[in-house]
Amino acid sequence: MNLQRFLFLGAIAGIAAACGSDSTSPKVVTPGPAGLVRFINAVPDTQSLDFRFTDVVAGVPNVEFVNLAYRQGTQVALQRVDPGTHHVRVFLDGGSTDPAVVSQVLADTNVTFQADVAQTFIFYGAARAAAQKFLITTDARPALAKTSGTFGFRAINMTAGAVDVYLEPGNTLTSVPTTPAVLTNVGPNSASNYITPAIAAATSNYSMIVTTAGTATVVASVLLPTGTFYVPEVTGVSGALDATAGSRISASVLSGFIFPPSVAGSRAPVFTTTAISISVDKNPPSGP
Image 1: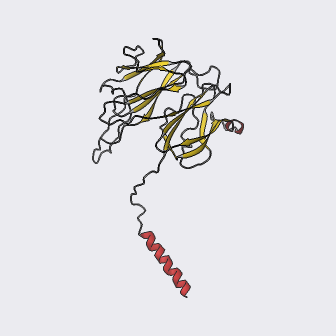
Image 2: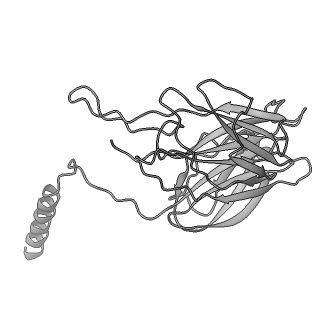
Image 3: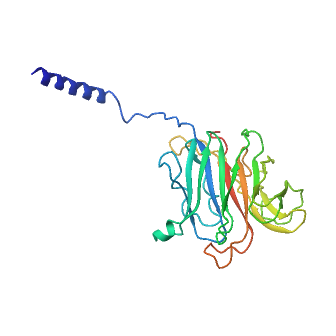
């Protein structure tokens, strides 16, 4: 009888404890320390690739960087990754379900990630020659205030020759630079340092123009995104919208990736010219 009474009282205590916690109440969850990572497919002569962490399943971005075709990855934001050393592999993908295809490993490496350090992994080189490798950049993104009137910008050159980079003001795309280069002699398969140009005027923008280093020969140009300004909450109508990165928004940070054409006749998407892809490395600070 005493044992039964003890068990009954214990059950009541458990129910009371459960009822004392309101599972629907909002809770503030503070994320733990993390590094940031992004993978870019710059292999111009093969099918889509999967970039996967094979040592753990939690605390790493294992779904964001799969089935990336040549020149893809720049559209994916930097992702959180638990600090420490992780095992990373690159697999063939291309939408295949054939184990003989998707089990092929193109790269296999251990990488150490540090808290609050952003890194970009650019996988490049000719697959047909088994010459792929990683270019790893530590992304020392400038810390800019919302009132700075400047934005962060760098170029990452994945072509075979050195280039000069211009930021030509204007709200329409141009490939004719009339101002001095903002970055000079950016070598092949390398990243420049970040610079902090003035933001574009409210109705203007910048064209990023790339020329062969030391010449006026234009190899590619693209209009930067302008970004969007913070939109305050309208009570009872809509919530606040944070600013997004662009040339008109202070404290934005952008990178311009310069890619060569894909290899004709390969399984890569057909790109016949050198082109630029713009990535957002950091959005402006939240709030007004």
